[in-house]
Amino acid sequence: MASPAKTQQPADDFDAAPTRLFSLDALRGFDMFWIMGADEIWHSIKHATHGQSAFWNTMAEQFTHPDWNGFHAYDLIFPLFLFMAGVSTPFSVGRELEKGKSREQLLLRVMKRTLILILLGFLVNNGLQLRPISEFRFPSVLGRIGIAYMFANIIYLYAKEWTLIFWFFFFIVGYYLLLKFTSAPGFHSGDLTPMGNFASYMDRITLPGRLYVPYPDGRPNMHDPEGLFSTIPAISTGLLGIMAGLTLKNKTLSQNAKTLRLAIAGVIFLVVAQIWNIDFPINKNLWSSSFVMHVGGISLLLMALFYYVIDVLGYKKWAFFFKVIGMNSILIYISGHFIKWQYANDGFFKWLGQLAGDPWGAVLMAITLLIVKWMFLYYLYQKKTFLRV
Image 1 (tube, rainbow, N blue to C red):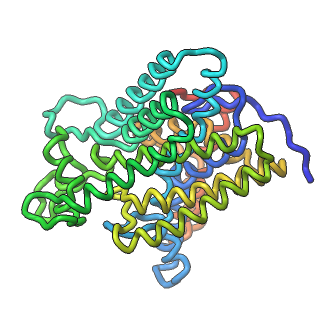
Image 2: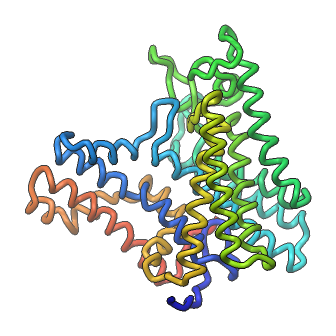
Image 3: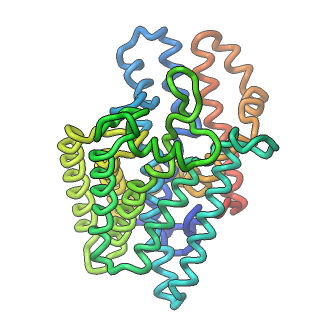
């Protein structure tokens, strides 16, 4: 068995505390790996094989989002990141509480992070330009992370630890009941279609600007997958991460017991999700309650696996690749809007794609694009330069 190596102090998006789990940074990097370019590798291989391979077609499909109901692996990236933001809370906010900081001080810090994430999300959506408010899109991935993270942390700061379970189910059960017994005007109660569901209707009448998805006839503002109303159940995703973090921080449990608890909980969540899916379909667009349970189960299992392999068994070297990504996760997420990665990739590796020729040259260029991005992050890692929120 490899002996655990002393971990370097991470400086990630949600925590600058020195007491951190290597596995959490690695899992965050693993999560971001798929949207920093690894997903395109699967799509380019599908194109190279001309769609004739059932295996590559299936793999490529897993890195797309379903049109409405259903689940693909790509749907896990967003909620897993929010889950991990929750996991970090007991190690960051909790540690500051133990050092004597007041809840009010920590609340202000959490609210500041939320505001920064909302502004970054708005910038990613719209850039810096002047145009009518009706053309701006206000909901965003980063905005949802910030809002859900804030409310989950408020509950963590002011509620008893044992009530976190109550609050977790309060949001997803309440959301379920709202959507099952209400609808948009003109639709029957419990309508869960893009036009008829209550969450999308509330976003249409309350949110300024434009929504992401237009109506089938081309009219704007039918639905937004990061809408404000469907952020309600996302709070539970953050709370689940906090509960997982509390388990990992629990000094009375052995490391094996922590791993087992997370794994068992993950399996239970997946079973409940499949049962709930019968009545309330797994749907990322609505962040349905069954979706919360489903992605929560997978997140718990992944956290258990990474924790056991990295922090319990001590096998850390293989995870360094992901840790480099995880320590600058927000930066790499927003970088594509401000850095011409393809320009850099062509400058260094276009010759390689030309030598390979069509159609496999595109596959090589997808791989080299990932390498270019990772080397940039590695340079920042070496310089101890991190984007902190």
